[in-house]
Image (cartoon, rainbow, N blue to C red; front, top):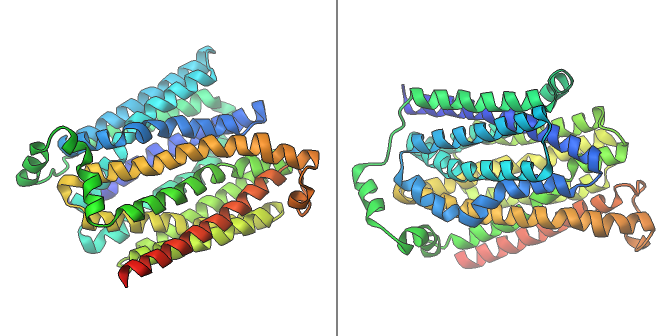
Length: 420
């Protein structure tokens, strides 16, 4: 079996696992919001899931570089399957609680901490330089495609199966991925590169990837992406509360907007997969973030599910495209022996930004912006929004767009100055 065929099949089974995970997350998220009428518990799910990589991502990168990638992926799938089964049992037997949910998603986050850099390294091993943009574009299509299919699956399965059945489906998808990994062999690095990795030790192992980024003047790009990640994550998790809070229900409007959101992300990844071979990946990436910033502003002003769906569709187009180009950029520059540690450190920066975003955005809306809108405080800020039930979230969306544009323009000017 050729390397690209293995890679595409691996992306397929991992996409199946992702579909199960998104079904479970969506079911629990909707149930939590309409049980508590708070956004913070929903954001804390993502916070606990990404906390392990924030705290120990660089250490995980060492083991990703040292161990066979197939073993890393197998153990990651097995650990996440156990978590889904535990959630299923908790709903079935009746001992579900928020602390238990956070423990499970934290444990699954530990597994994902190893899985993400291992997956990037496998892509670099199996895809040649001229095919990486296309391969990474196809990889980025998997996440939104799962997001498009998941709402339909939840609407069909939630009532007959409940959260218990959906969690069982989630566990089965991880098992399917593990079975595929048991049936294939993935190429490891050459013996020379493996010896170079194993020759390093102690603190040098931990900091080798960071030193590489500083030495090649890539740390600024990593920090810029971390800032954008902070602005995106917590704010995008407000989409369901924003739309359902405005409509007062979880009917077709929420499903339509979520479908548009994932369709936009799918379209962005498809563009990269079809075009491939971008000459200047970083300039394209930054231009994409400018478009996302503008669409955040438009999304905050839009009224009704149709216009919100359209603006969110356009908003999402650049995001998977920029992720694909960024991955291709680092896969081309970083030597195979360091890729696990470099990608693990990059994930650590991004997830640290995401965790802070989840921790900040929820309380910012629940305790400051939304109460101010409902009480009529700072009327100059909220009077332009017709629906005061979600005016606080609308202000956050617009502010996020403005800051993304400002940060990106600053990064472009600094990059141009460094080149001159």
